[in-house]
Structure formats: structure tokens, C-alpha cells
Length: 126
Image 1 (cartoon, rainbow, N blue to C red):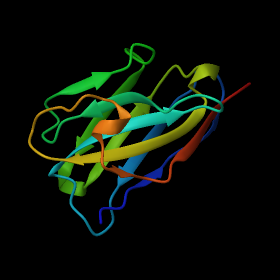
Image 2 (cartoon, rainbow, N blue to C red):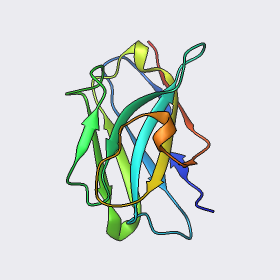
Image 3 (spheres, rainbow, N blue to C red):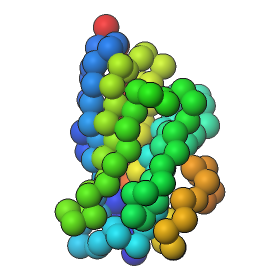
Image 4 (cartoon, rainbow, N blue to C red):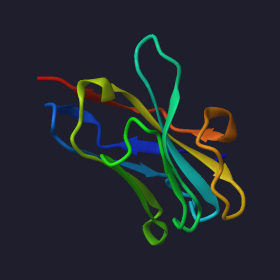
């Protein structure tokens, strides 16, 4: 069973940056599309950004377009989410998720992804 581990969360001031990482110790991610999702208190989990197996296709939520960048390093089995110009409304638990399949970018929605990490907290506050 694929297990995902997120890291890189923390407390940052508005306008700051963080880089989240997603890894799968003992597994290779090069057969999985990967998505980053987030869930704020009292809200539903939502898709933030997703990337295809090769990295050739990506998608972003409107709320993060132009500020966040998803990337992957298949040689090192890592997927990253670079978050710049962070806003207080970006505060949430961030999860990475994986979907096994071909090199077609899945919809960046919760029910498309099969494997989930435990999440990492991102808090944007002055």
C-alpha cells in the first residue's frame, strides 16, 4: 500500500513562501499522478494543484494560479509545491495524494485520488 509523507509546512507571514514536499518511502512515484489538496477548518477539502506522471501537464486552482508551482523529480521520488505570496486564506492542512495510472492528468478533485498522506499544517499569519 502506497504511503505518502508530506513535509515543509509551518508558520509564515503573509507574503512569504514555503515549499512543500511529498515523498513515498519505499515506493516509486513514477507511475502516479500526484495532487496537492488542502482543508481549512470548517471547509471541505479542495484541490490546489495536480501534476501528471511525466510532469508535462499541471493544473491549478484559480485561487493559487500564479502564486503556487507544482513540480516533480521522478529520479528522487519527490513532488513539490512551491508556494509564494502566501495569504492568510492559504492557511490549511495540505495533503498530497496519488492516483495510479497513465500519463493523463486526472481532474484535480478529491475523489479521483486513491492514496493520501497525513497532511502538513500551513499557517499564514502576521
